[in-house]
Image (cartoon, rainbow, N blue to C red; front, top):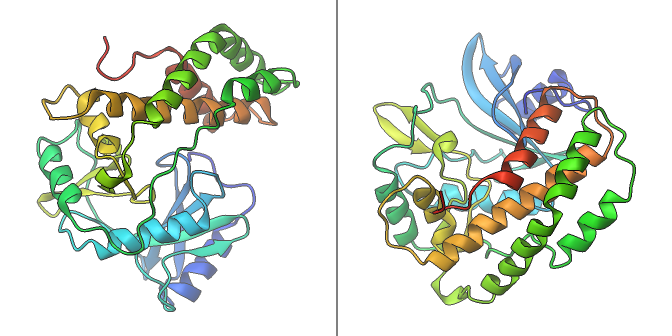
Length: 297
């Protein structure tokens, strides 16, 4: 998130980090990076040491799911995984009010300008790796009644600064969303749990990091056992030549698209101020309602 959280202060973040991860920490700095969570640089005597994250409590990421994902990533033993660190008590997450805290070591580097050439090889190695005992199985986030829920949402006031624009956009594309939801339900029946592998979930360029002369995959909060197309959809979207099941790629494109539409619609129907994050949410809603599906032009 680009804006600071309204319910947690820097001093509270520092106290949590010192209590559970690094007692020598003496400063934190909020970083306007990423999306969906809040982040801080943690310093020890002026040197960046840890990267702290606060995730909101969402159906997609609960404390239990985050704990399972981070523990699983740390157990993989792969040399391109930049994992979360355990607390002094051995857990990987700590509740902070309605949010969940986690940390990784600080890693000086940069995001690549475009997805790295070796991404297919990294994902193939990940998918071959035995599943840690802590890894959860993927389950869809999409309510089969999503079109009904959206119509009900449209009956409520959309009084925020961006509410009217968001509502008009949703009304314009509601029929298409209904079609996508029906297709998603049909494809969901084709997923075979016997084929599930360890997946990152979001291996796109924003979760690739160049440091120490190599590529790392970061942000493992979405790790679950799932069809490999959950990751391969990114490669298909990038136009890579990779063996895949087109129907499963379509499923995970729709899974992402529908979950984002529902999340952004709820956000913009509710109270908001029109800040940078709200405008990003409107841009995200617009993108998911109007873009081509993966593999389409």
